[in-house]
Length: 394
Image (cartoon, rainbow, N blue to C red; front, side, top):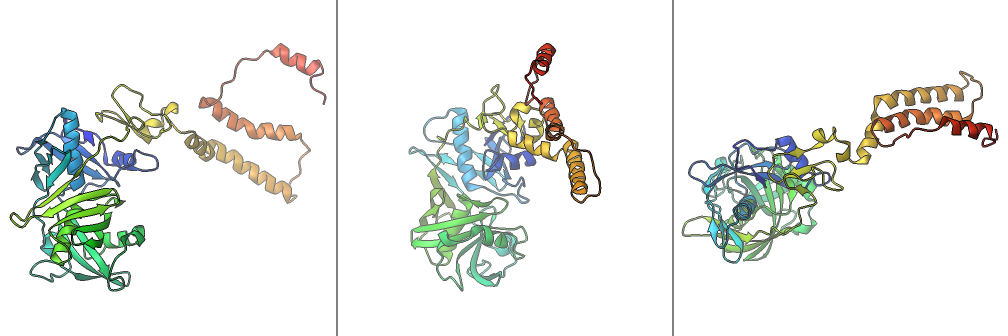
């Protein structure tokens, strides 16, 4: 979450967002969400970048993002008790509400079931809706129901080969992209694989468009309940288990709206990767990136290249090895060694110590220039005493 209330322009670029979301070298996230100034009567505006740096091409919603959004506002504004905030999103105005028990409830609006509006090229199977349609994916026939909750979802409870899914057994990284980029989904799609535990309890794993396998997807959980009701598999109010926890989803009959309720926990330690204004840009052990609370300063690889204190040693060593200043001497040494071994050239014997010195000099020069090592002034008289006084026996 980025406190972007002072500007209508995101303070983090798409490239920086992707770097921050990297789970190996960044903070690690499924996306970056901006709390931006109010428009169209809302208190705040929500905008997001996916973990790959892309921004949704079409106006969209992020259900779990909306829950985190209102909780973040609660923290920023120091609000107490039950409260709600009007949010402007790509799909319109929504009003998430923090309840007395600390849970956040979001009115996700009405599901869109018309194929062209989702969008999908799959033909309608029930009125205008795509329910239990057949989708060929890599030689397998899957039964899918398509729903939009402000973004496209393809929900499947199984295929001809696997009547009942065991979602924990799925190789999501293999099958997920094939659904996402399938020709039947012109804007790509999110895909939910669902296991029915009971008529009020579902379990799902999700492959999100632009983010891949994630621990949770709020709009995906809503789409799953809608699809389960349409296929006659579940009641209108269900608990949906996702790898990151559980969500309570209700598709009300009276207003046709889908409501999502769940806790948002904000207690995970953040000081290791998040720095307040005025603090050190690079937390210990995380040299590549540092994120400043007000997003006024983002230190990514580009900025860190000019700060030797903000760079991991392995990156410096890698650059040293790849440096043209070192590659050329190494190439020459290899050529000379090859020529010597094949007898093409002959040179007079030289001391092995001299060979070591010649090999070390370029690396030593580089190390000194980068400040890795320091050379202190030496006393020439002491050196002469060492050589003339028997310190050296050759």
